[in-house]
Image (cartoon, rainbow over all chains, first blue to last red; front, side):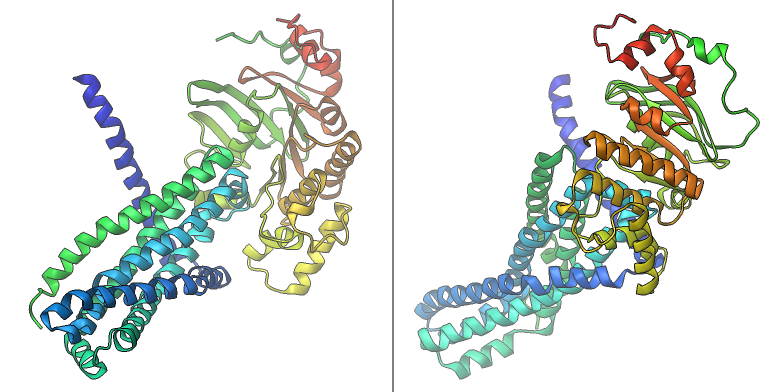
Length: 264
Length: 269
C-alpha cells in the first residue's frame, strides 16, 4: 500500500514541482519586463523567428483546414438543403477553435522546439553560465524577448490563419462545390460576430504564453549533453501541445460564460 | 570518509601571504554535495589581491566546482565565500551581477556564444554595459585580440576556431571589462604543449600588465609551476597543501609525491 502511494506520489510531486518552476519563471519574466530595459534587437530577432518565419506553416495550415472544413460541412449540410450556411460554420469554427488550436500546435512544433533546443544547447555548453558570469541574467536576455515576441506574434498569426482559412473555404465553396457566393457571404457575415474573433485572438495570446514558458523552462533546465537537449526539445513540444489542447477546453468554457452560446 | 592527514607544509612553514592583508577572495568551510557524493568537505582558502594561485588536484576532485562557487555559479550547502569583503552566499542573481563584474571566469571549453562572431563575443560585456559606439567597441576588441595574439580573427565564428583560440577569445571576453580577478578553469586542458605554454605566458602577461588576481584550476603541473605564486592542492574535498611551488616540490609528503610524479599505484596512501 505504501509502495502504491509512493509510486503515485513521486510523479505527482514532480508534476507540482514542474508547475511551480513554470510559475516562478513566469513571475521572474514579468517582473523583468516591467522593471528592466528591453533588448530591442533581440526582441525584433525573435519577432522574425516566431512571426515572419512561421508564415508558410500558418498559411498552409489555415488554407487546407478552411478548404477541407468547407467541403465536409457542405457534404453534410447539402443533404438538408443548407449548403449556403457553410460559410457561417467555417468562419465561426475557424475563429473560435480551429485557427487558434491548429496554429498553436504548429507554432509549438516549429518555434517551441527551436526555443528549447537553442536554450538547452546553450545550457549544456556552459553558455548560460557564461551569461551569468558576465553579469547578464539569462531570463532578461533569453526569456523576455521570446515571451514578448510570442505575445505579439501569436494573435497576428492566428488572425492570418483565420483569414486564409475563410478565403480558402470560400474558394472551395464557390468554384468546386458550386455554392451561391452571395448567400455564402451573407450568411457568413450575419453569423460571425466580433466576439468570435475576440475569442480566437484571446486564445492565441494564452496559447503563445503557454508555449513560450514551457519551451524556455525546458531549455533552461536541460541536462546531460546532446541526449538531454533532444529530450528537452521533445518534452517541450509534447507538453506545450498537451497544454494547448487542455487549456483550450477550459478557455472555451470560460468564454461561454462571458459570451453565452445561443445569444447574438 | 578518509580523513586527509595534516599537511606538514601547512603547519611547519609560515604562510606565503600574511593573514592581515585583505584577501580578494576568502573561502571558509565550504561544503558541497552533488547527489550522494561529497565534493567539497570544508574548503578554507584565501587569495590575496594581485597574486596568482593555482589549485591543483585529481580530475573529478571538485576543483571546477570550487571555482564556480567563487563566482556564485553554484550554491554551497554550507560555508562562506567573501569577495572583496562581501559575503556572496545568499545573494540572488541580480545582486551577484555586481560581484561578477569584478571577477571574470574562463570556462574550460571557452563557452563562447556560438551564434556570434569573435568580435561580438569579445564586445558582449561592453555592449551589455551600455557601450554602443562601434568605433570604441572595435578598438577595444582589436586591443584585446592583440593581447591574445589573435589579430585579424574578428569575423570568424567560434566553430571555426581551434581549442586554444577558443580559450583566448573566452579569456579576452572575460577580461575586457578589466575585472580585479580572473578565474581560469583548466586553461591548458586538451591543448598541445606549445599552445598550452602560450596560454601560460598569456596568464602571466595579463597578471603583469593589468595586475589582476588570478586563480588557475589545473591538473597540469607544468602550467601550475609556470604561472603560480602559490599552489593549493585540493584532495578529497579539502585543501591538503597550500604553499609555494618550491615548497610543493620539496615536500616529502607521499600523497603529494604521488601526484607530482603521476603515480597511480597509491604508494603514498
